[in-house]
Length: 111
Image (cartoon, rainbow, N blue to C red; front, side, top):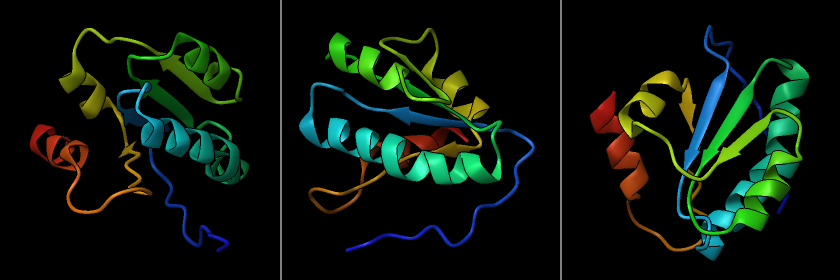
């Protein structure tokens, strides 16, 4: 199934965020998919968009994701609340599994 991004809003803040355990396969899969397929489409429209990936687990994967244009991947952050508040968009993709995502609820509570 091919996914299309039909609407990309213009934000004054060009920072996106992803928070998740990077030793967990669904998180790794999703951030890889977003980095390879979705982020380039967004950056075509707004080259200033940056994605900050935050998560422990796999330093080799962090290094690999850092090689993509527009991505900064880090293991730990000082204050997760600040990260949520500084992001215009929190990337939450539920590709595997179903139901509500803890990340979704957490992001709503911080805003």
